[in-house]
Amino acid sequence: MKPGKRDSQKQKTHANLLESALKLMGEEKGLGDLSLREVTGKAGIVPAAFYRHFKSMEELGLNLVEECSNRIQMIVGDARVKGAYRSALQLTIGFFFDYVTNNRSLFRFIARERTGGNRKIREGIREAMHMIAVELAKDMRMPKSISKVDTLFASELIVSICFQMASDYLDLEEDAHLEMRKLKVKTMKQVRLVFIGTIRGRKHKHR
Image (cartoon, rainbow, N blue to C red; front, top):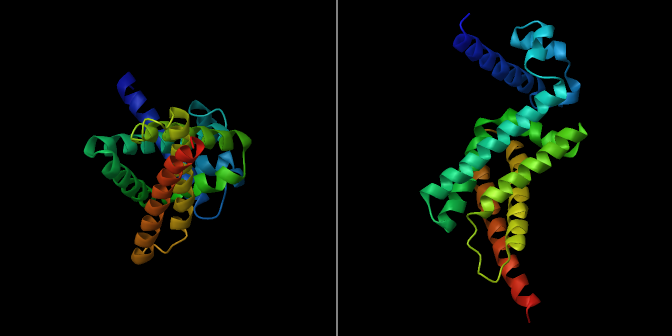
């Protein structure tokens, strides 16, 4: 097999292992409930071949977290290109929930592992959320009196709100469109309150 085809096949198998793990976890199982043999069986490869892609199931989980983080950072960047600060945030939240809708299994995994399961994966999720917040902070046009530290703090709070709302969003039936819209509006209102609270808090501090 030529090097190009070999690399392409390796990437395909790598992605297949990630997708197989997500399918096996579904709505109920955590990563710790899966065995390597189950995942490779679902992916259609022998167990020994797993180690050509991941050192462990833990590393597979961290790859899922990284995939989610990278995509959301791209969403934030795309929204920035398409609109100024206020509309960019609205676009970001809209695109974020679209991504959640199209990647339910991945966000189920994030929601479960964020509060339980493997310590390194929990740490990976916290780091991923921080990196998303750093990217989002670039869109937050705060008054000059608001420090970069406070801006990042507000951004981290917004990311935390969105991830929590994503968990609530996934608990809705897939055809509950009205409830989904209400939840998106609620998310935007909470985001606005973060802005208001940050600005007012700064003004109060300097009285």
